[in-house]
Image (cartoon, rainbow, N blue to C red; front, top):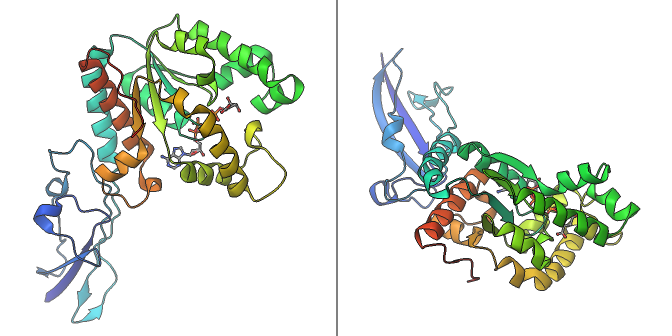
Length: 302
Ligand SMILES: Nc1ncnc2c1ncn2[C@@H]1O[C@H](COP(=O)(O)OP(=O)(O)O)[C@@H](O)[C@H]1O
Ligand SMILES: O=C(O)C1=C[C@@H](OP(=O)(O)O)[C@@H](O)[C@H](O)C1
């Protein structure tokens, strides 16, 4: 029996926009005849990203079929996000960058919630480096359970002194990825320590930061913990003030990873669509550019 199979291929973002063409509704429909019992197969390799772009595009595929114009249950449905492909690109990029890094540490700087910990862990794994979160090291050094407790039981300046001491110790080591605290950039002495390695500024729009922080709550971030207002609004207000104070300090970094730039490159509508892996890939690209530029900083704001 012949089954007229109408399949729909739904791409969140087209991989070969120039070949496939973007449909207004984001769907590409096609028909194929296939015999009952046979599996309709697609060659995933045909759907790889273009070599021209280092960033794979996130893709989701939905395959459904109908029989004699009646909807039939999907014989195959698969969502394959580009996470696997992105992980491979990250690994490959890391292999290229490792020799240029020559064991130098990577220090991630940026506002609270910019993804230093999340992206830092991915980078360390891809590079085969050790990962350290400077907030955690300060907690260990002071014997407190959280940064919030350190602020409450001591003071912000006590925290900052310990943070500087942690960065000093880390600066003596190699092959590390360090997620620094959002305020580490304000003390010039910390730059002296971080200059032993390469500094990467994760530049995330404030609205996206506020959304992330509102989602997890402000309890663990004492500088954002205020009693009035909803979580998003209070986070956004405090972040705006901190960003005004610190904007120039972040721009001291050797390299800048701008989520707005990544989003333009990947043709995303919203920076929230950018995965941490894509950010880690961009960080390695910027590090590579910096190193091939004889270490001349490129982290200036747009
Ligand atoms: N690219 C991303 N997209 C969405 N959420 C993210 C992204 N990166 C980090 N997050 C989330 O944002 C929150 C803060 O991230 P985190 O890595 O702890 O930031 P930081 O170390 O800079 O404070 C976490 O809940 C994390 O899961
Ligand atoms: O921006 C800041 O001044 C701070 C950021 C926090 O780290 P994260 O950036 O990891 O949240 C933590 O060090 C402390 O709450 C102060």
